[in-house]
Length: 207
Ligand SMILES: Nc1ncnc2c1ncn2[C@@H]1O[C@H](COP(=O)(O)OP(=O)(O)OP(=O)(O)O)[C@@H](O)[C@H]1O
Ligand SMILES: O=C(O)[C@H](O)[C@@H](O)[C@H](O)[C@H](O)CO
Image (cartoon, rainbow, N blue to C red; front, side, top):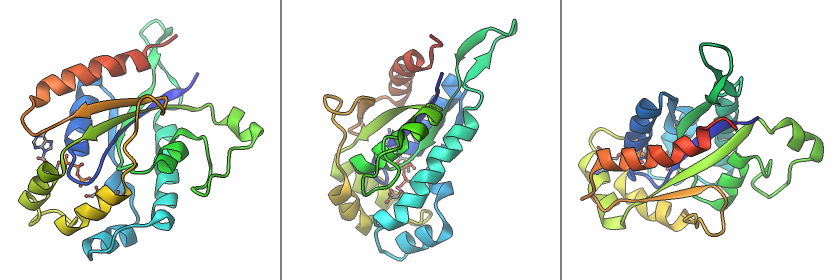
């Protein structure tokens, strides 16, 4: 049985770290900020005003998947009497802007060029089930947030337009594991955490 990787995704400034950390606390899961898994060269590139490309992101996406497999092994959390209580899970904040990036996190492909997993690898890698929580935030709210923190955060607000250009917003009708959380900056964060956690509990339930 697979452990569960919950990817909290969206562009820079969408609130991945904020929501991800709160969900992790509520669900008692480990939380990792994907920004901490970028090689320093990626962070330096963004800080210098150059957007990342597929070649920069591919090794990073592999690292995120491997981190999730490590964190969710073994894939069941034992209860006091040793019987499985729920699936092991973890939450990782990761922009996951393009469909190919999400497919790599899902384990459906092994390169961004689209190379599929071999049958043998597919069997071996049943280690992980994914859920993508997509933070859908209007561009003007994203810019407001990025500008408000620009003195203390490496990501320059002028890179927002490249984030939005790269974004292939996931559609739950065509991607199997997507939850959309709409945020306009007015919503109640606590309510959002509560509602999203309730849906995620379903994914974590041991069969
Ligand atoms: N629901 C919200 N409403 C208003 N402001 C928010 C909300 N969530 C996060 N913020 C604020 O927006 C800014 C960006 O949030 P956060 O760091 O969580 O986003 P992020 O997607 O992880 O960003 P990045 O990946 O660029 O680091 C922060 O200053 C945070 O306090
Ligand atoms: O794929 C990317 O371009 C990156 O992951 C970015 O999204 C940032 O790391 C992050 O959002 C920092 O602000």
